[in-house]
Length: 541
Image (tube, rainbow, N blue to C red):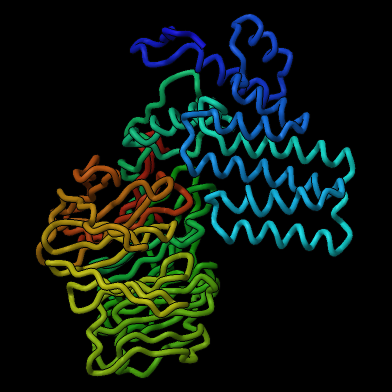
């Protein structure tokens, strides 16, 4: 290698011989062996280091003592790494001794050299047991061809064990390029597309990658709209209102959103779309403040602070079951991933939390005078954790299988809860005008905080959204919708359109550039990117 390496790049951070070496490795991994050999010849830089080239020759020719000496002569090795490399060499030598009938040499190798290595007694005992088993079953003899393959396997394992620059990590150039691409994506505040990234130019996304423009306004509720949620497939949208109804809207007619309702006299329709009439859910006697889609999108739960829990068939629009009696008031509900089990929480401590099957049979209940009131409840998409908001300021994460529970205490009252699609994070809205994000696993001591929206008096709901749940959206008491990139505490977009408090938002889980918001102005707004097709109003008489 060069004594004073030539540096490359505008900032002079790249050593030329290292770059050439990883390029040669890349050519080999792509199968371009002639090109790799040509580059080695022209550059006088070898893909394989002199140290490893010597070890390779010694292994292939069974010069085991020389191989051991070569490993000891590498001064840069940590003791742990050297022990692991020697263990691999001794293991191969042991197999070959046994295969050749030299049991005494094999025993001496095991007792004196292998046992002396700092690799853990369990590893040594496992090797000894494996060798003994081979002998007892008569499988200790190894054919010459197999010995050659085992030596090649040993070289591969040594490559994985020995550190740079003696060996190179596998596919190093691909890894470096991928990290460079990831760094660009990670620094892009608006990245929200499934499109592949080109290496030919630096990556950049504009604000047209996220929903910022109103594409449709839905006006069929007759009072404040309190809740809105896209289905898991993204093909449906459900909303609930203080007018005591819930509405199912269908989201896939020629690729655009269309209203699913009856008894409506006008609609907003995309120019190339069609209105599909489906269901308006009329059965509740009090305002409906919460809905929850079954994971398979065939059923919908509805409930409210003064209402019972009802289960609806999405296809027919009929109420299939009412859970409990009229005194069983449910404030929130959630499904398990199997679409067969559900949980609901009540603000009445005597009711607590119930787990049911979708036919209405009680599976389990957590209730009693010591049970605090339940303000919100959610199940992580993987079904492992039940997350609840208790007594205004407590987040309880209950692991369903182990029954382990972790409690997070907030200083201010919590009004709502949302879980990320990968089951790793949760966000809560606080009446201190902050949104806090916590990790489900419990590794964080403090939450990430998001500010900028207005929330002092009302229940405001936020959600994760966009590609890989990269964004957070929230309603606000100042009639606007706020969007943050999860990496930043200040909003990257503020969307205007509603005329009163925005109570709830929902990001389409399958269309990362589609967002819905529900407001006290009795409307639901559908937001799309700025390059979405424009909408127009049409009066249907």
